Image (cartoon, rainbow, N blue to C red):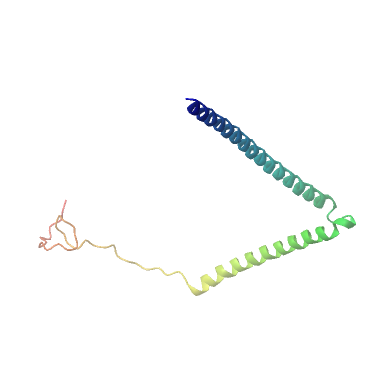
Length: 134
């Protein structure tokens, strides 16, 4: 019986160790996710600081920020030029479509049923009696 008691105690110890390890892993995961959220908050704050600095001092930045402000200004200029070119291409595309494919008006008669009997199928073999159906 001592063997079974010892085995039972070791199993209980392993169970307690497993629970402790699970709690440890859960807490590490929770803290890691919390850190990721805090890092995201920092990145957003850095971005906002940069946005505010550029808005306030972008045209006359301090020496350490000149290169970065010039990159932002150049990128904004490129974006505006690209938007203007896109608008021009869209306008040119509209006029090209109008020139190449003029609108065509056609009068297509409504499709008549293949037969006049009550079945109204195209493969009907019944003779029609030419009397109107009600």
